[in-house]
Image 1 (cartoon, rainbow, N blue to C red):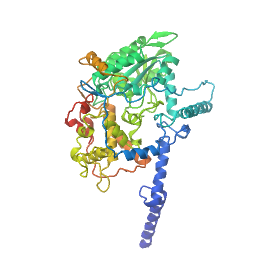
Image 2 (cartoon, helix red, strand yellow):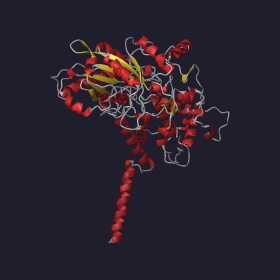
Image 3 (cartoon, one colour):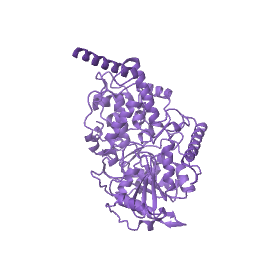
Image 4 (cartoon, rainbow, N blue to C red):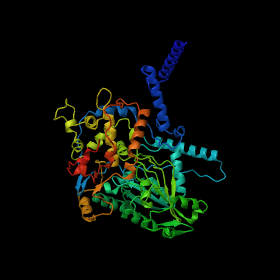
Amino acid sequence: GRLLWEGAARHSAIVQRMGKKAKGGKGGKGKGGKAGQAGQAQQSKNDKRQVVPGPTSGKVNGLSTVFAREDDEVLRTQRLEAENGISPTTGSFEVPGGRLLPYPCPVEVDDRPCIDIPKRPNWSGSMGTDALNAREQEYFDGWLASVYRAHSRAELNFFEHNLEVWRQIWRTFERADIVVIVVDARLPLFHFSQAVYSWVSTELKLDVIVVLNKADMVPPAAIQLWLRYFSVRIPKVPVIPFYVPKSGSDRVAQPPCVELLLETLKACHVQRGGRKAAASFFEGHRSGAVDVKTEELAAKMKERDPSEYITVVLQGDPNMGKSSVINAIFGKKVVSSSSTPGHTKHFQTHFLCPGVCFCDSPGIVCPKLGIPRPLQVIFGSFRIAQVREPYHIVRFIAERCAPPLEEVLKLKSYRDKDDEPTDPWTPLGICEAMARKSGFFRRGGRPDPHRAANRLLRNALNGFGLVLAFCPPGTDTKAIEAACRECPEHPSWSLDQREASDDEEAEGHDDEDEDEKIEDESEEEEESSGSGGGEPDQAGTAKKKVINSFAALGGGSSSEESDSDS
């Protein structure tokens, strides 16, 4: 009886394993397993993001960021070019503290037409929920179809296709009294949407402030150039250089730029039966206070008329640090932040004082024309784990590095032994050498260049030793010299050495693990990540100080900070 029972148990286990293989489970091998895995990957893609161009956003539920799928033919070409040599670009400018690169893409309105963004269709309180949702869906599908009719897929950037995310933006701006547009100081105009600015300032008639966040990453001359540029492009709009210091606790230090931003907000005007100074709503707020009882204030405000307080909305692309700016204003962590694009899903409200409410909105990528795809990845508009071919982005970085990227990363001794010393470095060769240095290996002991490329892109995104800083359009040598003369000797937004901010350090490693899971589930790569040599301790990476203002690339430094890729 015991033998019969054991035989039945073994038979049952075999049947279960065969069923898993037929369904394509993880342990399945052969055609059935691969087909099942492909089906699971395709389903994951449908859940995470739009995989075909065109107005099919209604298929996606929830608040996941949705982009059109990359073109397969383009990907094949990029994979072939990964083994071609790197040719450095020219035209950069040496400035105190680093190197500035020429503006890398067309400018809205000046070089390319500005594509209008979807705006909430007319509605009334008498409409039912289903009728309102149907009207919004019909309008949004029509807008998306019109964008693809007017412009080819190749000239469009990766922009938001999910109606649910746009709905969050509509609801956010409906309650706004002042809008703070947060952009990345490394390339501010790239993140500045002319369509959003026109909507807010012209149609909604709201006061606007532009915040150049992460200003401590770039040379002071770059900030001076951008301040002058925006003073001409959007006159009368205040532009505030800003940075968020690293904090090891729930308290966040408030640098001088916080006080400057608050004073600028007080100087704005809001619509309350006419234009009214916003300063009157800040009564009761103590400058530098960090003991704000946000939950208690929120509970009290539920019963109040919205006209009794003002709402300051922070808007911008994903990964601009909007949540970190709010944390710095409050002096403590009141909003969850992360280095992963799209971390904020719903708009969140927090009261600074009884008369002022701050609203953190989800990051939104607006449609633009002629944007290089690598820029969207390097600056966080497109998620790194969803990049199907990372080597063309590595090429984009390497072509703009001085000294060369392989010297910055100290990869000479990790190069393939079959390569000749005189052979030019390739994007694939850089990633293979970085994989050997970092201990990223697949089964069989082969280096894993795809994983190394992802690490390199994350370092560039977070400014860990790799900082690409760009000039405004039309910058020449005279403008650079003038900006260097006008720079304050010790600007309030600049640091001698930059450490990872809270959103980059506290959340960065968890986000990387999450990204790798999404990548394994949703992408079928030629170079699949495998287990191997083990990953070095990542906790030490974020703690390493990062060289400020492109010095790692432009100053010829060979300090040990550039070893933080591991």
